[in-house]
Length: 415
Image: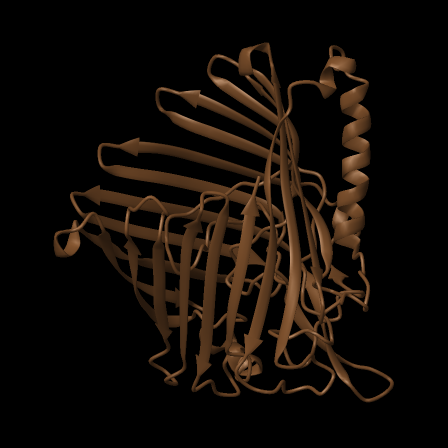
């Protein structure tokens, strides 16, 4: 079934190296002797996923109208000193039938954490999320996007880091030292949901001579003032969003080389809660080679509780997306309107639905996305996702995906 094999990218090789190095360090640390292997908590899931496309692919090299994957994610957790010292490892593996570049291994997490009275220290590979908006996470810059997993930007690669968190009466201050950069993953020539032309991940371009070993730095202040939650962040280092440089090969074909340039970014996220209303805002100002721009996403979520006399809650969502680069932006979210709904039945099976549409008033392009989740018999979960791409023009970044509207069904078995 998986006859095309697995191509382990530089990202995957880096994950394996970090795992081996980290495990070696852990076993040689004081107090981590034979008892290190006792009293572990192990959780995770194994899943089977099928993805079907509505139309034939634009490129004849791409796979057919359907593909399948097997997925395994496991979390290993162990704590000492009454929970003040802990270790977490979360390996992730996907095997895909159609795209060898989608078959990959990653360490989502692999870190030691020490908790003091008013501070926390985390060393290893971790995941950090910043932001409040629903449709686009502008300020979320620590982890790299794992784009072979999904195009929604929600899935992230593990990031090597040292994170010191200081909790004070005036707020929380997080300082990050990021010693290694993870390149973004992209579907390969055989994969669907990819750009036309394809991205040449084997020949990235770096502005820094240190390439992926450039040490990045980030700091974030967060606090709540009454009903307002505030996050203010600063990042300096290699930008996670690649700039694509077209190049014509000797055979006449064109590829896109991902360029990773040095940037500075200031980010602000705000959320105001008042009754059933959630008002949300994320904004950034970024400077660097080929990346001088400002962008923001803002809007609201209003929740109707106990709709139709049931235990269900219905949330309505609306957000506006702006990018000062306009048509020069490498994202479709430069002047768009998002609206959607979130339904939680609040039943014993945790049934939920989230759907939304992004509309570009400049050219009429729309993208409709829906997600459904429901637990089955306690240990199983059904996840259904679908997305359509409509009315894209040649100037829209989603134009390459105009034939890639899809439906995806996944069954997970948790343990």
